[in-house]
Length: 450
Image 1: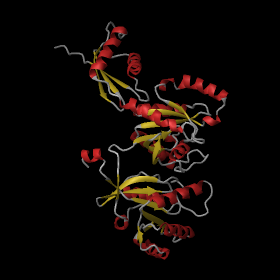
Image 2: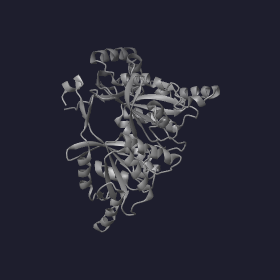
Image 3: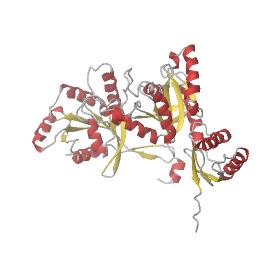
Image 4: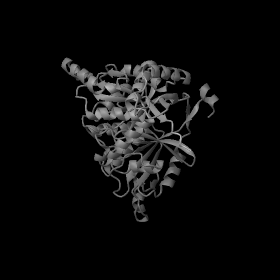
């Protein structure tokens, strides 16, 4: 698409959506990974690993589409399982085509029949995938799936890739023509919601989206895959990414929790701004500080949301103020918002904080202004003499924004404390609200004696 088309708002093509559904543990996520050609969806040999509906971009024979992985569907489900089933039904409603996955190795189950009834009510095109056909001897078992009344069952092995090409050909043949819609030139800003487990990240996304978008439970670690959602907050459209809670050490996690932690880090890296959710009703933990440091080191804009404000009393707020002064002073540059994801208190104020952080993140200082600033700093606060020599800042430039990164060319190595002092004065003079500021020093090499 040309820049002119983008600037004039010409309708763009949006790829069709394929929802992958089926009862628990039939290999849906593994099949999704096979289709997209990489290990993105969390996979483990346990039912219920996938809980939310998660979208991935896919392509086959030059045609792009979006594939949505869902949790296992089960009738008469209760509690967490019922919420997972609800997400699967929402995915069906939003899809252009449904890829129904069954386990050919065990044959048709009562749950499969119940899913078929839901699919028939949806009136959506359906392609039937008989999974776990790992060799020619089990192909006959796939043929028994004709009795579901959904047409030809395509025998596949998500594990080995057997039959996946024929299945994708059938999917493309059944997909409707793509639709068109107006899209902004740069798309919505990407916002990752991160934090340690059970601080209310999914509840916050649901409150912002005004629907049950993510599965919420009091059990820590309910969210596994990052979940994307387009949400309007304060009149601004954002792409929010709900993530799994970051545990103390990724290496200590096992199975799907380990991969979920990796997905969360990936979500942070592809976001522009991170909203770090901290439980205001609980003591600020070391893990909260590690997450804040991670966002800073990754170079993303930062907003701190103190959630569960409705559960704090006057005494707790007094202690929280002291904890913030002691522990989070290093992140005083980040906007903070006191919210309650449960009641909706102040969640609309997140938009103003996010916009302020993005503005600071994108700030660029001209070379002239920067060097005038550095001249004033050097005159008023010269670098201390070290070993009989006094390093000087010869020249400075802003190498990039997003985040603001400055390179100082100096006559010699500079003390880390002095570099931090320059960074602090940069913030005082130019703002950079909500953004990390990175300062690099390049000392002039000594000339070799001839």
